[in-house]
Amino acid sequence: MERTTLVQHIRQQEKANPGATGEFSSLMNEIMVAAKIISLQVNSAGIGEDIFGLTGKINIHGEEVKKLDEFSDITFTKIIGQSGTVCAITSEEKEEPFIIPIEDDRGKYIFMMDPLDGSSNIDVNVNIGTIFSIYRKKSLGDIVTDEDLMQKGEDQIAAGYIVYGSSTIFVYTSGQGVHGFTLDPTLGEFFLSHPDLVIPERGSTYSINEGNWVIWDESQKDLVAYLKEDDPSTGRPYKLRYIGSLVADFHRTLLKGGIFMYPKDTKSPKGKLRFSFEAAPLAFIVEQAGGKASTGNQRILDITPTSIHDRLPLFIGSKNDVEMSEKRLAATVNKGSWFKWLSG
Ligand code: AHM
Ligand code: MG
Image (cartoon, rainbow, N blue to C red; front, side, top):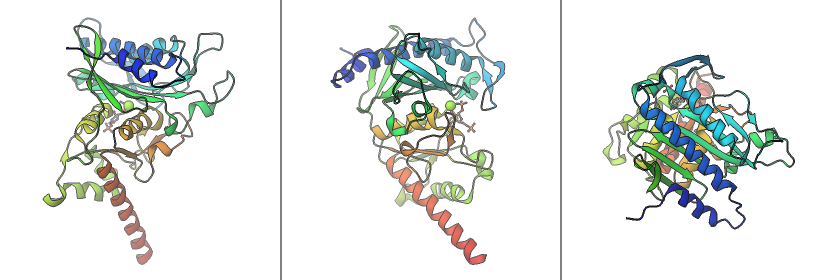
């Protein structure tokens, strides 16, 4: 049986673009190499070298840095940084962008990553992943400016993620649909396993950390209560699925449909997830697969961040489920303001 490798697929997609120089293919190939190295580490964690546990460091978000977080960040930064295809790398793990020196081999792309998403699941053998996003340098000249590092979500050239789970899966889009590849560990090669992924228009699951109920606002409580009501004519109640690794919760949502939500709450008034490293790349992927991604009232890809570590609420998944959530949230907010107005 003839199987398409990830390298062949990337080359075919690049051929469809007449102005292509091969730089994009090189970058994607380097991402694939880094992903294989991390996959190997994740799968052998616990054997031999001690890769579990904490580094003792705290990252820019005030979170404890795990050894695998650091390993993934360093691996991606080294491999992509030396690829000659990028001029800057930003990472969820690093406060400042890494700018490739002008005298070094550098290229026209900006690479952004959450090197190891779902790190709280590392030590318990639950799926974790990497999320990445690629933009083209916008400003002219050698200096990498804020305009390059804080681009509108819509300006992404490509985005993808890798799930390190029961198998390692690489999913990406370069604006020509969404395609998934599974790592064959015996050959060390990614093969096309999920061509032209399309998310169901409507699903039957919702995914949210419901332990946060008390810190949600009324509109969020109303939405989740609605999804749990018994009304078979509208497919309710929805099932609840929550892994706690965005990459894994998103991957399930992409394949099966439904909605993943991380709303704002009183602990994270702006939301918990990051625009550049989590929301924007997954929004690009979901839209390419026919789904939607929103803050609850704004399309994610319409947003231009104001800092590389911006956070925001995220509602992502099947088109109908995201639209229904937006309507429901707006209706409760409006009901709330009428109530306040009447009683005030
Ligand atoms: P991380 O990138 O530091 O791992 O944090 C992001 C993770 C997401 O993977 C996941 O969706 C979310 O945080 C889980 O948060 P919570 O534990 O609050 O449910
Ligand atoms: Mg993350």
